[in-house]
Amino acid sequence: EVQLLESGGALVQSGGSLTLSCAASGFTFNTYAMTWVRQAPGKGLEWVSTVTGGGERAYYADSVKGRFIISRDNSKNTLSLQMNSLGAEETAMYYCAKVGDTTMAIAHFDYWGQGTLVTVSS
Amino acid sequence: DIQMTQSPSTLSASVGDRVTIACRASQSISHWLAWYQQKPGKAPKLLIYKASSLESGVPSRFSGSGSGTEFTLTISSLQPDDFATYYCQQYNTMWTFGQGTKVEIK
Image (cartoon, rainbow over the protein chains, first blue to last red):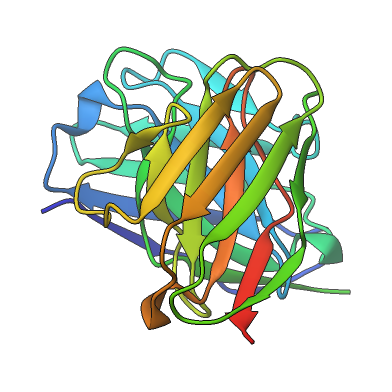
């Protein structure tokens, strides 16, 4: 059974930094790209960042490019998101998700974690 | 950037109704489109990928169609468990979600 468990969400001041983690199990972690998606309270889904299975390539939304860094440790089946210079508008639930295709890094997301809440106070 | 526009934003329907949600892309995305269902306080759940492929375990009352810029999610007979918000997502170029369609009880 695929399981994704996010952690690291917290209350942080505007301009601060935070690192989120996602522990994965139930599948061959290093053969799938992994992604972060966020959802502000009462709002829709926003793709944030994706990293390929081997970690060699990362993709970022324009809104976070240059401030967020996605990474993975395939020896520990863990995905991370380092977030810097956070703004109040980035208060959101952050979800970790698995990309649903082994042959394509850009594909649908077939499994999602339950999310971790990041609150940025101004 | 590719923009995704869903319509309607809110849909009121009754159990047993046939429900259709539309999703339009700002440029052609071939068949690289997925649909997700989200219930309050829960993570999204994949329903449809590659425009019309039903994810394993998803009831057959859900179906997807379309290609290019126009797509549709259809629920053939709405069930009580289907009241939720639905999102389309393109993955032709990076990823973009539609703004969501809330299906509520009439």
